[in-house]
Amino acid sequence: MSPGYLTTGPGIYWSKDENLKINFAPLTSKFTFVDDAYTTAIDPATGLPYPDGYYFGVDAGKSMRYELGFYASVYYKLAIMTNVTAENTLNLYSNYLEDPQNVDINYSLNIVMKVNKFLSANFSFQTIYDDNAFQGFQTREVFGLGINFGF
Image (cartoon, rainbow, N blue to C red):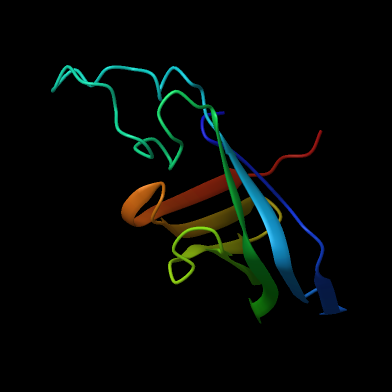
């Protein structure tokens, strides 16, 4: 679990129903935990220690990074057609203590398709932007096919 994240803070949660949920937390603490073996290691290319913030924004020799900022989250589930649903989750975070104009983005889309009683399929897409972790967008796509059999 390197990195591991913990986000906590008071906020306002609103839910229209199970398909739409919104959360705003204007005073949120975000902790990033890493194995300090990665922040104390020597860069084999240069022979020098890694610089501060190189590994997921955690300073050299440390195993945790603390941030205080604004957090917003939106969840929306949509029935596209019979037996096909799409779940969207958008998380936004802005660090008040360092570069508040740089907003961390975490968006995920999960499409669940039930073909029949024996077959199901799932498509997942996720994109993350966190300038402390990586200077650019990170994406992940997964397609799964399931065979269902009851005993």
